[in-house]
Amino acid sequence: MSREKLEQFQFELLKEELLFSYENSPYYRTAFDEAGVDPRKVRGLEDIMNFPFTNKKVERDRQLAVPDLGDMVAVPEDEIVFVSASSGSTGTPTLSPFTRQDFEEWQDAEARLFWSVGMRPGDRYCHALNFTLFVGGPDVIGAQKVGALCIWAGTIPSERLLFILKEFKPTITWTTPSYAWYLGETAIKEGIDPAKDLAINKIIVAGEPGGSIKSTRDAIENLWDAKLYDFYGLSDIFGANAGMCTERDGLHLTEDHHLIEVLDPDTLEPVAEGERGEMVLTTLKKRARPMIRFRTSDIVTVNKEKCSCGRTHARINIHGRIDDMLIITGVNVFPSDIEKVVRDMPELTGEYQIVVYREKHLDRFNVEVEKKESIDLKDEDLVETVRTKIKSLLGVSPRIKILKENTLERATHKAKRVIDKREKVWSE
Ligand SMILES: [Zn+2]
Image (cartoon, rainbow, N blue to C red):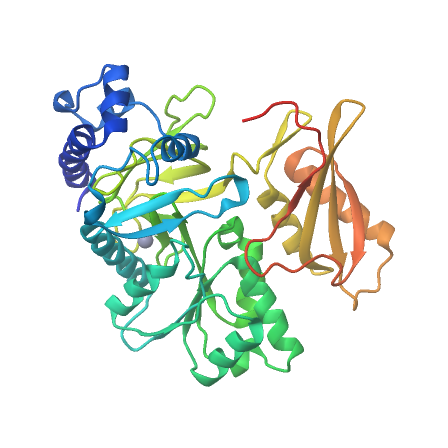
């Protein structure tokens, strides 16, 4: 679809979604009335800017205020067929409900994303994501819709997963970037060369920025002799809302399901196309719980040019989360920036940890990295190289601590890269 047609199509869907939300969700009815907006008077896509925002906090508050599913929900419970939950690590887990239609539409979109990375009926697919409450679990159905032979592995101990990879010879798998790295290293320790002894030729990754960082991608691809594809999703909406095509130049957003805005997180005004800003998403078809102007806290850039693969859906690049962003003496530091440096240096194992602390009222940070055992180099020299590289990229110089190989804990799900030792001076 041309951009113009696509936007016309989005506009038709948007009008319906806003009206449906207003008429069926007690929360949206009140919120729209309070903001003085009327869905019946929407004349163009840009009118979305008059509608109030939602975010994780609103979602959680409404769920607590109106048990069990909250009053953002716009259908009676007997129309809901599936519910997932976000991890409760930062408070009450938020639930994400789907109607039968939502679920079908979602899995069709997943099938399209799988197809875009080159998955075909001849592929064997090993789904290595968590099935317990996690919104990424059911995405395996999308791969079945493509016609691939699907193995519902879930998150199982590495030895068992390696057994599956050896015995069933899947060609594609999906996991987090840190786990792809960890699993490859574990395989080698067990005498399996992931590049030669296994059949994996594509690895889909999501949940961490690594899949879009070239140096991390290269390292995992070399380890596995496979191509890496980054996907993006959020528990509040879909397992994956966006994914790389074979061109791997950004992630195509499923724009027939989602309207994207990229806003300056401080002023909440739109930024120019190609500039960094917070991604705000509005669902266009979701009925169980529409998400209108949901602030994702993810910092992205967007490109609406037609991709060389032929697809016209906009491509996003994810740079990190606002919550992950550290402000160190006035400079914005994303852990993903540090990762770029660490993963680029052959002397290091690629694992790292950032420790933030306050010294004489100033924020400082240490970067802890691991030197490979095989490297014969003085720690002092290595410290200097790492510091210079970080300084030239970010303009700040952290303290560098060199650790022995295998000191840092290996992630089996999402890596915890930042330890913040600063006293909190504000609360949510
Ligand atoms: Zn493309």
